Structures are given as structure tokens and as C-alpha cells.
Length: 250
Image 1 (spheres, rainbow, N blue to C red):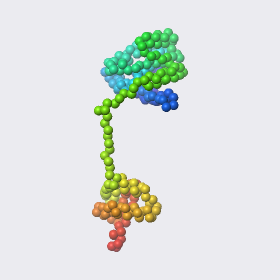
Image 2 (spheres, rainbow, N blue to C red; image 1 turned 60 degrees about the vertical axis):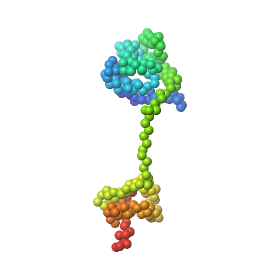
Image 3 (cartoon, one colour; image 1 turned 90 degrees about the vertical axis):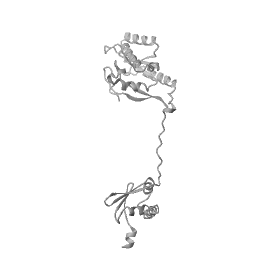
């Protein structure tokens, strides 16, 4: 949830949110901090915020028309437009919508003056109140229709990089001594085999032991210096090494 308060430029960091228009229809909105003069040159973290603007297909100016801040909404609009142009002139060619907020407390003269001035310049203007919900639904549907009419930007083929993880041989395994009387067997396939074995079932354990002998793990453990009674770790399981050769010679 963005932190908000009753003063200008209260949003400090960009926030993303999903607007659900109707079942199966939605769009993402980026709530961006207000820009100050000099933002194009990095003032007030301007570059950080303007980079987010570049990712948006439609720009919505949210202007406070309550008349309580002592600011001129039209002047604020001009400041933001100028900063957008100085940062990247292409931004001004994107579809723009103006939302005049706090209509529930706005003086009629100020509301009409700002609305008429912006409409004369060709901007779609919506008079809304986030507090009461006035005009918000109409704005949402208008933005959804506008976004539906704008093709998604195509990603240049040369910019697409496909990363493929190297194939791992699931039959591969390794043995290493990990403690004074502890040895660890690693390998995707063998770890899965142990995980799938019912270790409470004596016959299943014997089958596992024969498998370890057949693929050479038992022999490799002996070559690594394992002794009768040492611990063998495979995945999450631990086993006591019972060297049948040692038992036979004893």
C-alpha cells in the first residue's frame, strides 16, 4: 500500500497495482511519485521515476483541484509535461489522460477552469473523487478501452536472449568424505532413488543396496577409505556402512 498524505508529492516510491475491470479483464497501473522541476536532470530522484514512466503505454496525470494547497493545477501540469519532454520527447507522444481529483471538495470555478483548459488542448479529462468514488469507475473503463486499442510493444528479436540450463546427467554421481567417519554420495538420480525407497521395508532396502553395489558406489566408497560402521549420507538420509567383505573376513 503506498503511503499517502494531504500534501503534494506524497508518493515517495513507485507502486504497482492491478486494476480489475471485470472478470477476465484487468490492467496494471504504476503509481509514480510526482515530478519536480529538474527531474529530467536527476533532481529528486527524477531519473529513477522517469525510467518507470518509459515503461507505461498510457500516462495519467492526477491533479489536485481541491484548491486547498495554494497550488495551480494547470501550472503543476505544465511542470510535469516540461520534465517529460526534457527527459524524453517521445513520452509526450504517448496517449495521455488527465484525472482531476478531490472533486467532492473542489470549488466549481477552479474545477471548470482546469477541465475546460485541458479539454481545449485535446486531453481527455475525468473529474473524480478518490474519497467518494465519483467518476472513478468511468475512468477505469475509459483507460481499459484505451489500452485495448494500443498494441503491445513488440520485443525486437535481437534483444531476446534465451538461456538454457546445461543438461545434467541424472545417472552421474560422486562420493566424497565429508567428516572423519562420514561420506556423502551426491547425484540427482541416486538421491531420487533413495527418496523413493521405503526404508522401513527390509526387502526394499536390500534392493537399494544391490543397486548401489551394481552401479559401483559401494566399491567407490571402499576406495575412498570408508570403514565398517562409518556413516553414509545420500540426500536427506543417513546409513551405517556395513562392509560385508569385512564381515566375511572376520
